[in-house]
Amino acid sequence: MSSTSASQASPKFRVAVCGGGIAGLCLGVALAKYPDIELNVYEAAATFKEVGAGVMMWGRVWRVLSLLGLADAFRELAGDTKDGDTKRPFSYDYRRADIGPDGHLILRLELPYDLYLYHRAHFLDILVERLPKHMAHLGKRLQSYTQDAENGPIHLSFVDGTTADCDVLVGCDGIKSVVRRHIYEAMAAEGRPEMRDYIDPVFTGEITYRMMIPAERIPLRNGEKHPALSKTVIYCGKNKHFIGYPISGGRTLNVGAVITKPELEGVPYARPWVEDATPEDLASDFEGWEDEVQDIIKCVDSTSKWALNMLKPLPAYVRGTVALVGDAAHAMPPHQGSGAGQGIEDAYMLASILGHASVTRANLAQALRAYEHVRLPFANHVLSASSNAGKLCQLRSAHGDNEATLAPAIQGQWGWVDSEDPAAQLERALDWMNAQTGEVGSQ
Ligand SMILES: Cc1cc2nc3c(=O)[nH]c(=O)nc-3n(C[C@H](O)[C@H](O)[C@H](O)COP(=O)(O)OP(=O)(O)OC[C@H]3O[C@@H](n4cnc5c(N)ncnc54)[C@H](O)[C@@H]3O)c2cc1C
Image (cartoon, rainbow, N blue to C red; front, side, top):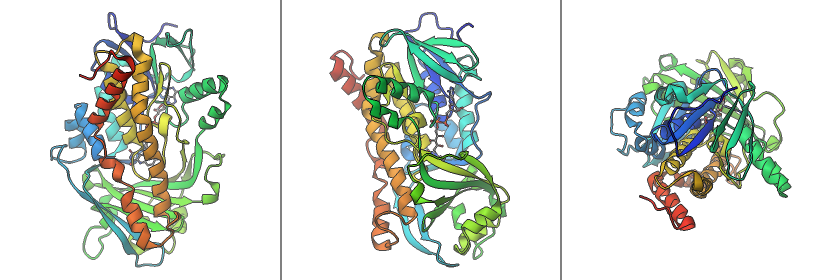
């Protein structure tokens, strides 16, 4: 079979992106603007698609989307007319909600960061529209790859029997990544058997119901619209929490309802990850919760249950000229709304480094290490923070339900959102690469 490749006359190198979810498509769109890089994006499914649910993006992700020149499209989609660089403070309400019809506020978290709320499928559409069609290859599930020489050309084999070659392989193939399996099997075969422990995801012990409800169906409360239609509200209880926030310019309420068996944390999850569920199951799991929650549950006419799995924080995102991006590198629980955002930050960083004038076929491995040098500690920190965030709002952290200490602990977990700017991180990665080679400098 012929390889599927782009048409550049003589590219400086060839990049294969395997996986066309939010991270892979964002990387593809970011790389496609460099005419001297040959790019092919291989997606296993027959179409690019996302689940029908909401996704939130923090200000730093917005900043990355702006740096990638995508601000206008995403601003319009968020139903926001403001300039993307404008800080817009927002607040999150955390409520104690499992002790009868009248819950109470634990914490109103006023954060100086902006937050954008999207419908996932619409978010993905914007990226699909911007990826040049000839670079996108659907129905291409990567099965395996081989490399004849260290950092030499990589030969890809797909499940449909076809093959393709590249110089850099980027695994954007999600939490069950085939590319991660290859990287970690190779490291194990080199005398580090403990690396096999990082291949498979682990269960968080948490299962979430997911649903979207048209806003007009939610009844008024005290003559006003439901609080979760104006802001993010997290209803907290013992080993459970319920979250609601508006998407699509407030026309839809996005809801997640998480139930946890802490004793199952870290064990393999044997059942299917997504299963049908009924509104009655949901109502039964949240029986006795406050009226604000019941008002939402009464409007649910269909739902499904998702087992939440995650990766152990990986010790490497890169091996030679193969890299991991997005959930393939750092699949995390959704409790800080950050998995996709971290994939977008990866994509910006990796594309900017590969597109740098000084990066050639000869120093690709060094370029990937620069990506890893900055992104790995940051994204692994967000992974751990996301896991802790779930424990805090399910009243199963060391603070339990002691609201006096719980509230400051919740407040303190968000510092990373407004820490080092993504553009500054890129400069740091390029400086690091420069220091390694003595040849490559940031421009
Ligand atoms: C309940 C829930 C709520 C969440 N909420 C948020 C939120 O509010 N904000 C946020 O930032 N994140 C959120 N996340 C996390 C976010 O959904 C993920 O981090 C993000 O979608 C991962 O994107 P990805 O592109 O890395 O992986 P995926 O979306 O998994 O995409 C991987 C792609 O690779 C393809 N693929 C797989 N194997 C192969 C192969 N062998 N060859 C070729 N293609 C392959 C798949 O078909 C798929 O298209 C949430 C997650 C959950 C479960």
